[in-house]
Amino acid sequence: MTPESETLERRGLARGLKIFLDLLFWATGLVGVMLLVSLPISMSSSYEGGWQLIIPTTIGEESLRPRLPLEFEQPPPKLFEHASIGDGHGLLRLSHHNLPLHLLNATGQFLFFVVFLWAVHLLRQILATTVRGRPFDPVNPRRLSTLGWIIISASLATSLLQYFASKWILSLVEILSIPTSPSIQSNKEWIVCGLLVLVLAAIWKEAVRMAEEQSLTV
Image (tube, rainbow, N blue to C red):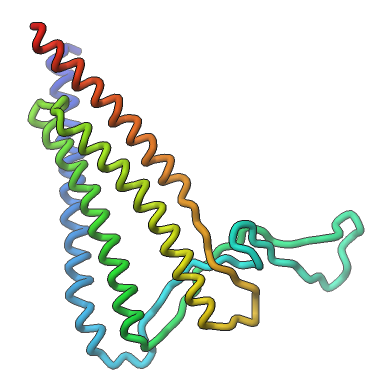
């Protein structure tokens, strides 16, 4: 395979990825617009069942290391003196008629769409310059670095918001069937992903610098 054919193949792959991101961007934007349009309708509707609220919840007495003690019909062998289920997580689904709570929940969903669209838009811009034959555009490393910080910040903010929302809702209701606690989800996979993106952005920045020095030398 010649260098020219390899370049064309890479551009074709970048063009295909950009088309996919374009479709994802506009589909997500359409869902966000539908959410905004449906909000006034849901506020004015007289739905008897109320609005739905879904809150992450930890099943157990602790948030960090939840443990749910088990009861047996017959005592277990002495080898197993204590038995419990650990790291149990679930979704608490509630129906309510509180308009401020409904608006707050809708605002959180809308912010998620905005942040997601921002991240996809940055990727679209990076691929657009690559398709035009300028992968070492100095703006691309900054865009990629911004994407990394978006992933890390959104992951940490989501964890904090879910914890305080879970803590607040559980303080308003009393559940007797099983013990529940506010949920703490670290989202460590997304945080590691954001850190890897920042590392890639730093490497890309150095590659851009080397490409600029080489072009000046030539």
